[in-house]
Length: 577
Image (cartoon, rainbow, N blue to C red):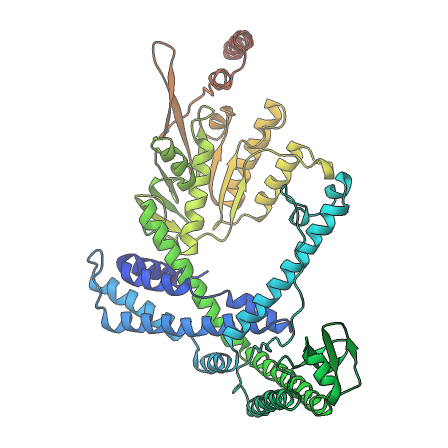
């Protein structure tokens, strides 16, 4: 990624920090948008429906409002910045907003959005979903009833929880079928000329049905007569009560009857009903045709919509970065082409947040890697923060190159092509790889691929084998990173011999952290790094804090003292020789 692209992102983040009202306006508008990239992809594969069209049209219209906000901000600057900035910086950020605004392509997408809004009936769509939900609830209630009556304990174990019976008594929920339900249309009547004509024709037929119904009632004196359609009998006239006997005089032939009801056919209604059914079918067909045209319009605007979605994503990320910077006290990093790190007061944002919840403060640390010291070899006690330090500098580097502000007091970072990490311990037994094998595989990848522009963090390389082998592997890694890869590296280790073995590495610096011990035996960690070597790992202190039995700790202390004595004697003998 180029420096100019990263700085443009940082300018955008800084602008939304300096002008909180701009940030709030954009966030409120972004909350009204949908995932247009996902929606466009659905249409590309022919799976988009009316709901997707409505969401896409709303996103396009909201995007137009966002462009208006950006344009007004770039041209007027009526809002007041949080901090006064140099004129050059302010002008550069204003140009960044204008460039972002110009990247939107909304002419044809806006036409598409208006077509969608003009064609799709949102109220009808909502009613359609309400009816779907009712049908689903009826089916769910039926399932609950069947399960409650027939399922045993073993049957319930294999059923999904949502259809398992509730603890309360289950009562059946069966609604009687109703006829005369109004048609629900997802398209507006004027979505097309053909659709408008068909709806007018259907309206006339509906009026004709009402007139025929009223005419039959008056002719036969049957106030209960209704003209309806049923799945079994199709278009029929239905009467009940005393009207059943009156209707028999005019229409003696009955399709079905009971003691209180009678159904029969009226030729005029049979003909009219068939015409209405055909018109309804043609309306559905025309709605599908209009829907197909709108879906095709989305595909035709595929590239423009995806580009607009990408710009919206950038705005969304910039506002999120700005909000995070304000909450976490982050600063703008300076990016350069030089292969160096100059971080003052760097922090690990996740660890810092965890400590803050406990009422504790994070100890910040500096990191200066470059021409003078390309590798930092870090020693010190367990639990004193070596691993956290490695991770925080890698995280700061990543945040900076994504265009985010970083947790530090000052940060000047040279661009890196890759960040390599060898931390933690884990095995892969499925592929027959031990902990040490996994460690070596990751280390091998780093030594093969790291370049002078890379940033490497390595934590406890060689821990999975004997001390002698571990020291040999650790030294080989440092030698290769220093002479071959020549990249910026933070290398943490408990193999203190490595500090002596690398004394002739002119661009390698040794740093450490400490344990502060008190006369009463209590101790605390000094998390701030200092230049030098700490040859005490204080592992037994960690073991005691972890709850290792005191007799075990005492034995360990005795063995450790003996081992140190043997090491000291060996050193004296070597000197005498």
